[in-house]
Image (cartoon, rainbow, N blue to C red; front, top):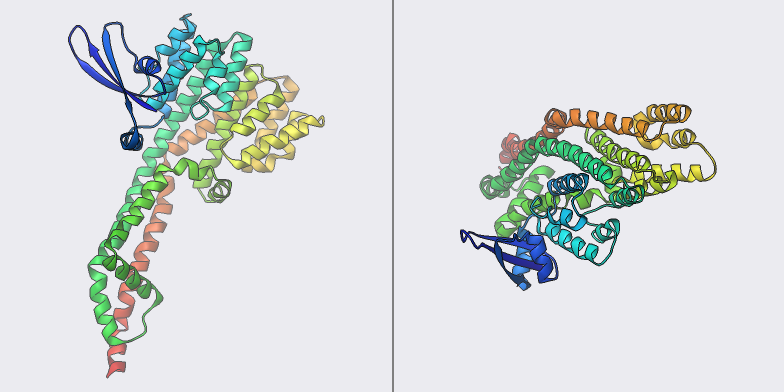
Length: 408
């Protein structure tokens, strides 16, 4: 349930409104970050208003996650009381969901829950690997260190994601313009072509026929022109969920350039997670299980699951990695070499951090050049669209003389 909190400063009468996603008024006050010199009025948002609000308000973002963990780490490093440390984070986040989660966590902590258990009740915000790290930090007495590492890791991921999104702006604009051109021509040029070609009674190319049918549909049902834009909006909005489908992941990883980006991103996240777990003294088998569960790509889920099964029957980490190296693509044998060296030198999380660092550096470089990497794909898509339009429009024109002679 959404709660709207109206805050009024008793000294200068300045007002502010904060929306908090929680179930109770007292929690809404915590999530709104009410100060000692502020009066608060809480009201519930329900029904159609709540639906509209949820559709239009910003959801949980990686910016919120980075600010939350870094702020929490700073508080714990300075021995700020636990509940107070969480309360101090409400003004570092923007989304109502994060504000509500912080308020709920504070309530659970007051009831005696552990930090890991309270945060674990919000799986949409805190993934299993984060909860495992926090639980390990609690048991080892190194919670500030763990929180700082999680915050730094999320900050690196945020930087890379920003570069990737910036690089995707150009292809997205080209795609939208291409769709808009096709729809505009379907309303203007194509109807005139239909009248001319229909009077000739000659057989038209398949591309022209398809374009004429599209134009006829748009003229009869103009609202269908919104379908491509709605589909593009849905694609961008639900991109994360679409990419979580295993069949889509297998298809995307086979696409040149794009597949390389996906593989490196999944590998960097997975190996960083495993390194953090191992460094936090989590048992290796448990760490592999958590890494497999939290891996965002089906290939890496399968890889870490199989490595774990090999360790169960007594094989070494290097042997297990080598047996399943085909899941890692071209970098498989290189990673196996690093793990073999780690086994000989008795290293712990260091080689895993090195692997994650290498992937992040490569991904950072690719992200900074994403526009150049995606440009060939964009040109191919745009060229195909333009070629289709030219063929569909001009092919009948070139044979117009033959059609007129045949009619005579």
